[in-house]
Image (cartoon, rainbow, N blue to C red):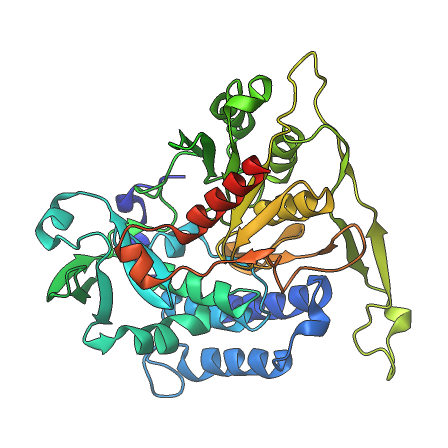
Length: 444
């Protein structure tokens, strides 16, 4: 949703009052404690983090700061809560502040990618500022505000990143490393693809709650020279994604021998609050037999179970069995039964991981690339005080045999890690490995 900047201009000096801040913090503490499905995996001291947050409100809040320091701004309060929430290691945790606060967090129109844990510019919006800054695609950011990029990410960004795995956390930290207060400037030191270094000044101009100018279409597709169909799914949340997939697949289900196989690329299918059913519908197009989805369980809070031997109070679980994905009726659309390879990365999360789990349950093909983000399961958005909201994962998902994959990710059968040298040379190693696999299958 887009909000005019002027709408919030009169509110920029306002602060959430200390009482409401206490209520927000108390709500975050209790809702996580009783709704988060992976509570037994939390290693941080949740009570201590709550106390630290309340202490910060008390010692710095109020006119001039009760502790003698400057008053805690709304953005500082927001960032403190994000640091606290990141301790859950919930890859679907999301803190949703009131719109006036959310509108003041922004980033430059630059898309970043972590390659061997180094931040590279993948794309940028060609606005007036970018035409002057000329950040250059595949340039590496080696410093921000004079601080080496690795230290900037580790000290200023990583503590606020909610993720289930270390690799996913670093990926998300790189993606968000230039976030900050809207309208503020950043000086970047860049290493260009040829090795030369130079600086670039950019502004945090795109608010996080506005449409991202570099958003890619839900589906992109090509037929490669060797006859392989390569379909990139960038979003499963788009309501038209299944129709777009059918269009991209075209007549391949009827022309099986003319195509060497299908590569379904989920490396950029990042987390969204919806899309599971669309993903299952896409998978139904790729099978002529039923496939089981993941199974799940959710905690049932039973106060009578609390005691020295069960401090978690989650003494029982509500369990749901796997559902079934059915192939389409042949008279409507024959399924594609040729060989399929799926590409995954540490950015693959949410509904895309539900797809991966069902794909593996059905032994439909091979997964190549990196372990997924481990950030899936049903989520719940809960209201806190003063217009704040929070999202948690409230189910634990597993393969049909009961093996859980949340907080670990789905490990590919063939691991291919992206390398800086390959990327700079224009080589997509995972894609080439998939093409080789399909070529070998065609020769058999």
